[in-house]
Length: 95
Image (tube, rainbow, N blue to C red; front, top):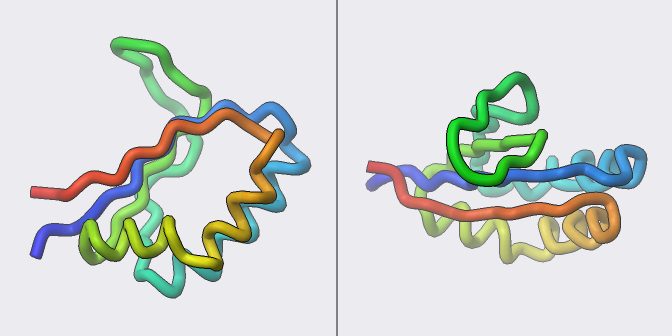
């Protein structure tokens, strides 16, 4: 079964508030088998519009990634992100 990936591009506008979101995601990510491959760090924007924070999270499957996003645990954390940043998130199936 192919793995699933959560790819997020984020511009944090309120770092203190965003930290509450980031710490709130741990429970959901652990529950659904997330493996964080990239979170922030150096990057090179080669094409298109970019964001200063880029995140790649691996899950056992695309369904696990979807279930994590829709979970009550993640949705509670997501509410803490409101007003703290601008995010674009896509969930994709690996090869």
